[in-house]
Amino acid sequence: MLSAQQLHVRGRRDPLLPATSLQVSRGELLLVSGERQDHRTALALVLSGRMKAGTGSVSWDGHRETRRVRSASALVDAPGVNEPERHLSVRDLVTEDLALIPRRYRGALLSNPWLKVNSFGDIADQWIEQLDPLRRLELLTALALANPHTDLLVVDSPDRHTADPADWLPRLEQLASDAGRPLAVAATVGALPQSWSGPFASIGNDAQRTAAATADPQNETDVAAEDLADARERELEIEDAK
Image (cartoon, rainbow, N blue to C red; front, side, top):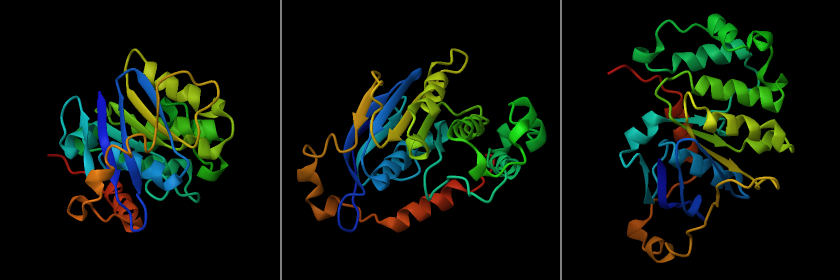
């Protein structure tokens, strides 16, 4: 289970992430709404262990070490961090992403066999910008799950690509409820779909409780836009086997 308590990240002028608490278990999809894209991306980064909060805590199965959270999670399609570049072909993206899997789990994964086995051969030569929202999400989540140790998916703003929840919501529900590999799935969204009746939270839902703590400068971390750039650099690093 992923548990986040009173997460807060301070920005230069206003919070990069207002205080937020939530939890999501394996086999469950949690939607977290927030109007601002920077808030949604900051939350996705913290929940996946790619950024440390100034205050608050994140734990995975009771472990609070950032490394444990990061190793169990995959961050999917975060703007300015790891969203695929528009000029890439699907084949090139697959080659790059498979190379990021730690060597001890990678085996002989090659792009062409992977595309065929995972039923993406028909789009291998298309540009990323040509993919419809559903096919894009199917591809990115399949790549995230190429690492067999991924148990937590954190998907950043899938609704920014489409106004129709049918283009992303069923895919995330399917991944969370897969009996063969039950995942904890958290997705940040601009607004909850009207049809959604499952677990949800909102960014800033714990803001008042932590106002006193964040008023003390000694307890604040001055995090601004460059931290998102740092997170992108860290996300693209190839992890060596240990």
